[in-house]
Amino acid sequence: MVGGNKSSVTDFILVGLFPEFQHSIVLNFMIIFIYTFAFLGNTLLIVLIWGDSRLHTPMYILLSQLSLIDLTLTSTIVPKMASNFFTGKRTITWIGCGTQSFFFLMLGMSECLILTLMAYDRYVAVCNPLRYPIIMSPRFCMHMVLGCWIGGSVSSFIHTVYPMHFPICGSREIHHFFCEVPVLIKLSCEDTSVYQLVVVVTSIVLLVVPFSLITASYTLIFLAVFRMNSVKGRKKTLATCSSHLTVVSLFFAPNIFIYMTFTSSHSAEQDQALSVFSNILTPMLNPLIYSLRNKEVVAALKKLMGKCVISYWMKTTPEL
Image (cartoon, rainbow, N blue to C red; front, side, top):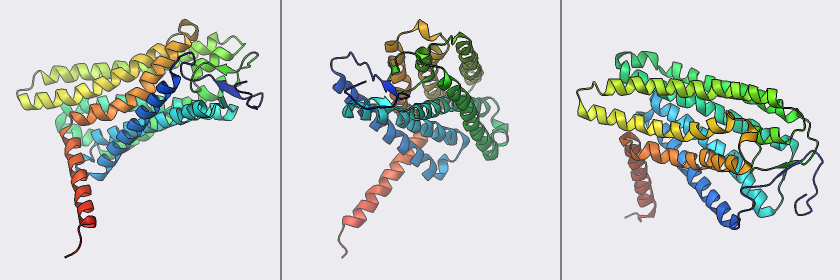
């Protein structure tokens, strides 16, 4: 047990983020800063999209869902990690571990599907613009978003309940800073090779297939873009698509490595580094990637700031 804390025999011990690192307090403060920036950035993006009627289009509705996922994903991981580090109490209950694992998987799987849907939206907009309002109707878009959340929830429930019932005969120390399926599998004294194959198959369905569809969509988009006569239209399309491709690469690359290889083939340090990159750093970068090169989002931000300045000026200026 850590620091003499009293805990149940079913509790787990989260070792934390790079426990051997000498400057761990600096590292944790950096993570908290990144989390705060990600939280504020994604919240602002959601407010801008839902507060400006010009952004009530399928592309921005999907972007708001991505921001909501990133916002919730980081909030599932970082507050507990920070609390454990600064209080010295590094235990997490069996129910708490299962809950954290469920929400993490649900949000991650939903993000895979949302990113795929975003690629499809851009494909229809560029390659079939005349039918875009019909195909990507608000009703269809909302149904697809709901399907992404339901699909992520069902798959996450299965992959949380099953591994949580593996017998643990030895140490209950989790060499990670949050509860995740690959690290929970390592604790089991039972042969989990069959289940790991199931995880790989699920990863093919939820990672490789979406990534392949996204790649195919953007291949067709780039072919269509190079046939455009309008230089302005070509630049605008490439700017939007390059932003999405950057986010796709940042999300899929580390997750494919983590979930499509057996847990014994990579170390705890590799898992932690990739998790920080994919689940904490990337959610901070997403609002920047989508907003800095997007004129509509920048315009909505200027409009909101103008309203705030006018409101502040009216409150502080004395009446004549």
